[in-house]
Amino acid sequence: MFENLSKRFQKVLKDLKGEGHLTPRHIEAAMKEVRLALLEADVHFKVVKDFVARVQEKALGQDVMLSLSPGQQVVRIVHQELIEVLGGGQASVTFSKQPPSVFLMVGLQGSGKTTTSGKLARFLSQEGHHPLLVSLDVYRPAARQQLSIIAESLGLPIYEAPQEMNPLVLAREALELARNKGYDVLILDTAGRLHINDELMNELEQIKGLTHPVETLLVADSMTGQDAVKSASEFHEKVGLTGVILTKLDGDARGGAALSLRHVVGQPIKFAGIGEKLDALEPFYPDRLAGRILGMGDVLSLIEKAEQTIEEEKALEMAEKIRRNEFDLEDFRDQLRQIRKMGPLDQILGMLPGIGPLKGLNKLQIDEKELLHVEAIINSMTPYERCNHHVINGHRRKRIAMGSGRPVQEVNRLLKQYVDMKKMLKTMSGSFMGKALMKKMKGRSFPGMGGGFFG
Image (cartoon, rainbow, N blue to C red; front, side, top):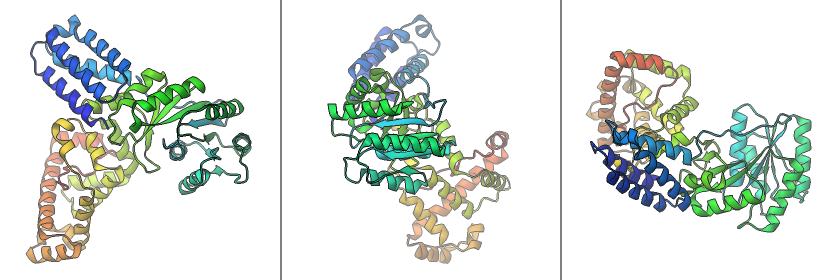
């Protein structure tokens, strides 16, 4: 997502930053490239027109043109305007004063609504809420069974009533159950259609009138581009949306839906689906996404991912081992496992500042299997060898290679990268800044520092 747009934006802004003095001609040429980049990304033409006009107006202001670093000022303006286009600030879901809070999930068939309902229930459960799921899709074969399987895999409650085929009755009974059993959130997974029609809208209006949802969330497929924006406008006109959940944001779509929805529909994107797994749903942060588009990274999201997967006690223990220069191959293997828990490597690298299309990340083919190969090689070593890498001679390397099913060259490369990484960690931990960083980042250490093991 956003790879081509990010590449074009960064190229334009890099050229501007290289100019010691900006003229209106520079700005006009840059805005022409920005306009083309946004249109190619399938951003709504009205959004493009307004965005370019606002940036150009501010960039031609006296404060920018007379600045000692006008290129940097333009970058700042573009960043701020991107944040505004994406929604300004992070929009949280609303809860009613009198539980249960009803969340009405709407969307076209194939947008990922049922899976997203399960993801949202999991997210809310992690936040301390007690959600109840119910499927009102009595039309699509196995739709209710799909949500039941998702709920079971998450260990979350679901109201089923398999013999009932009236969505209004199902909604009323689920609402009564939620009230009586103390569930504070009721998530209604409604039926989707291949396209918007009066029958679908009438049913949604009746369900909404019966349950009085505090949130009406449209689940929109970001891969459909402007079609997602069009359907969002129609849903909002007929039903009245309070927010959007954008799915498949990790895909290879051009990004037009994400950059158009808030402006066209007038409702915020509240969550983003970033993968197929049931934990791949996260709050939508406009400032973080804007930073990633412009190559500024998203360190906050990276820290949050690390905090979710790394145990604080182990992190402190690892920091102490690094300080004492006792970081061995078993520790190296543990760090690789932590990285794999954090998600796909390309997503993790995309959160680092300065790493993006212009740095060649789009050409870097990261094979997740490489991590498994490295782990297999370390597992083929004896415990003594893992703690004392210097004893691994030619004979041992051949044995390790045979045991892991990998060539000797890979064993040699792994050992070299481990030694280089250990030297770097020793240097960092011995420096004043390294000590200060370790003290500050206790419980927030980043696994796999050094990161050369897959290249």
